[in-house]
Length: 411
Image (cartoon, rainbow, N blue to C red; front, side):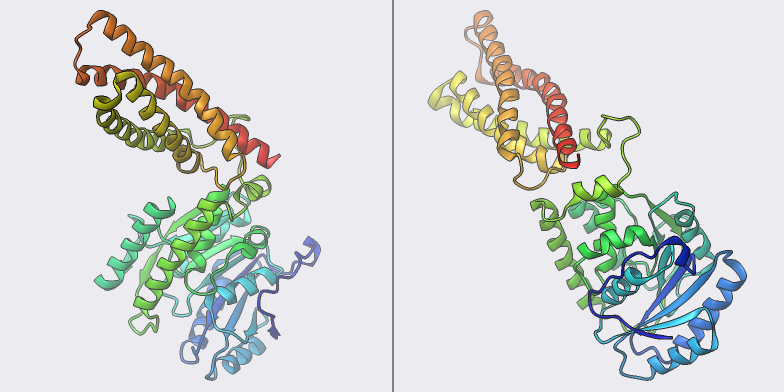
């Protein structure tokens, strides 16, 4: 069967009684007349022999200019469990978005036509999704138990890219680029309209969004053998991916992506009601912000002390760093984006600042009563100690502030 999907079209979710297959495996192809038949025959045989769920293979033809479409049509005529979807525009992400969004299966997956990934990993990939345990699943070539055969150039690029994702987007999944992924169709329908990339960055953008929403991503170690004849332009793909990282990072930072709204309908809530998720991670990020704030406070205090004295220098340094600290913790530690309630959060942060000012100024006052000739370095040591006490109080207070913000957004 040959279908034509309009760009960006997403079909409504069919009712359960009309769903004909549990698993729909999509093979996106562009000018793959040589490898397509071998791929489809091998995959169809594996599905029939090893996957105990009704399944279908969908060949997504990305505007091929060779005989790929005719090969796919011939295979669809031969096998009941094979169909063809033709798109008039190129783009792997565009093809996956169109086919996944219009699928009637419970779970949709995709793999590359070269079948670099061992098919024995397919059932472990999709089983947690079909059971409802997980929301997405990815094959990982970077797991310790994975067995991978590929050249050093691809290995270095892959590992560097994943390090960039961890640093820039705080990603926790291990392998964004492996062409072996699956997702529950109901989840895909909610996320796909927000994924902008139509090329190779599609996977990464989808995964980052899913992770921020709080979905469960299942990772499967895979055996993978590099295709030496791959036509992927590594340099162009890497540059496009980096542009995608910047775009998604900006969207997350500005609140352009409706993460809170999606979390309400899709995310997994905390195990204990009223307790925000990820306290350990929050503490770690809060500590990073705290160290930077303390260093900035110390530099400002030492710079201002000769001109305006100890108390005034403490006031100005603490006020400046308090504003910056609240803004940094709002975005980095607690993941609150956009301008909504920003002024309110700064006001609440300044209330905590007032407590810190009282604590540090009181410490200075007590020090000068006991040691009138105390050096500015001793003053600074006392102030830093007082600030540590204030910092603990600040974390507890800000956690309460931003927890209430998330509750207000999602209710």
